[in-house]
Every structure is written in C-alpha cells, then in structure tokens.
Amino acid sequence: MSRLTPQRVLQLVAVVFLAVTGMTGAADQVPGTAIVDTHVHLWDLQRPAGIYWISNDDKVLYRSFLPKDHEPIAQSNNVRAIVVVQAGQSLPDNQWNLDITAHNKQLYRGVVGNLSEVIGTDQFKPLFESLCKDERYVGYRLSGRYQEELSAAFFRDLRLTAEKGKTVDFLVGRYTLKDIAKVAHRVPNLKIILDHFGNVRLDDKPLDPEWVKELRGVANFKNVYCKVSAMYGRVKEKPAPRDISFYKPVLDLVFGCFGEDRLVFGSDWPVTRTSGDYASVVKLTRAYLDNKGGPVSEKLFSRNAIQFYGIK
Image (cartoon, rainbow, N blue to C red; front, side):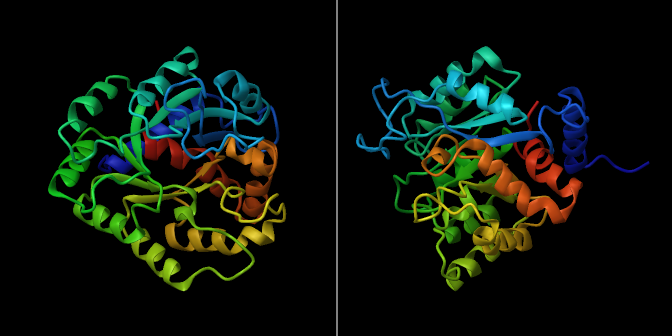
C-alpha cells in the first residue's frame, strides 16, 4: 500500500471538498469549472485606518465594499469558496475580516490577514496565535516592510507560521523576488504564494529579462506558488485590454515556471472594477485555459487553492 505523504493528504482533502460542495458536478449554475477565488478584498471606509492606497478622488474604488456587495456576484459566477485577502495593513483589520465574513462560513472559507507591521517583533506571536484560533485564518500577507534586513526574528516568525500550517502571501515590491527566494530556501516547509504574477506591470513591451530570471529562480522552490490574479490591475493602460493575446506572454511564463500544480486563480475584486466586471476576468482566464483541458482548468480554479490554503 502506498504511503500517505502530506501532499497526497492535501490532494484527498481537495477531492472531498469538491465533492461535498458540489464543485465537480454538471449542475453548475454557469458553464465551466466551479471557482475558489483566492483574492477578494473587502473594506469599510468608515473604519479608522481606511485604505491607504485608494485616493478619495477614485470614483470606482473610493467606497466601501462589503460581503453584501460581493455575494451576488460570487453566486452568479459559480464561485463556491472565497479566500478574503486583507486590503490594508491595519492590525485590527485582521480580526475585522474574520468577523465580517463569519455570517457565511460556507462561502468565506479563508481569510489572509496582514502582519507586515509586527513580523520580526515580540508582538507577532501573541497576535498570530490569537488569530489562528479561528481555523479560517489561513495565513497572512506581507505587503509592507518595516525592517530593513531579513532578521533572525523575521525567520523565527516564519518558522512558527510553517509549524502552524499557515501560509504567507507576498506582494512583491518591498520584499523582492530575491528576498522571497531566501525565505523559501531557509524555511522550506513554509507555504508561500506570490500575488499577482509576482506583481509585474504589464504593457505591450517584452517582459523584463532580469525580472523573468528572478521569477524562474524563486519558482525553483517547490513550496512557492503563484496567483493568476489582478490581470486588469497589472496593466498600465485603463481600461485594460480584453484580448487574451495581451496576457499570453506572462501566462505562458508562469505556467512554464510553476506548472499546472502551483498556480491558483484570484480575481482581485473589487479592483477588477477599474477595467471590467467580475465575469470578464473569469472569461479571460478561461479563454487562456481552453486549450489546456478540463483537468488543468479545475486545478487552477479550485484544486490547487484548496491544497495550498488547506481550506476545509
């Protein structure tokens, strides 16, 4: 009898999850594979911290986006599970994201908080362990950097994260791809995911060769995944193109680097609204996957996300 490896256990969990939620049957509400969306933002502009990266003259995004705004969209687009990613870096918003989605745990299966401000400090462990009491707290995002060096305390906290079976989303910028490669090497049991194709900016020019080299380098570490997310958001021109040929170079690259088993879908809603509606993002992604077959589509839209985040 074959040995049950951790990876095999996660694969079996994914199969059970898909069966229980009905994500494998022909009764889908809309055509195509049912979706686990791993990158949805919620925010309330009435909260003290606000959202630092949205200006008050942004006519599309400068408003609150709450579950009541997103749930009808999820239902109409065959989204069966959502991982909410904290939009800002406010520490209290970690708990707020858990609380605001607690009414519908069947849909909001995971929350990725943000512990950028405290990682590598004595504040990290008590806050992190408190948040982990809710099993839907699947990990945290590192989008801001408050320490110049990757310190011993920084790696201490990452090792604790790995021990707890939690994940880290990296928004490349303050932390570079080279930094993330160091993390993947030093904490090989830590599950890491790059948001938004490694946060590359897209235009009609060839991808930067140095960036491509660094992406390939970090992809060599098998504990690193990549989100096929924010396609509209990574484009300089607005509205972003709707032709899949525009996105094909970066999609080909990440498929070549990470393979079909380490890529997951994320809409980046509501930021998608700057260039189009939710359905158009899904349609664009499906257009690329059309020639790759149903099993690959199912991996990217659901199975890989379930395995990576340990969604229950």
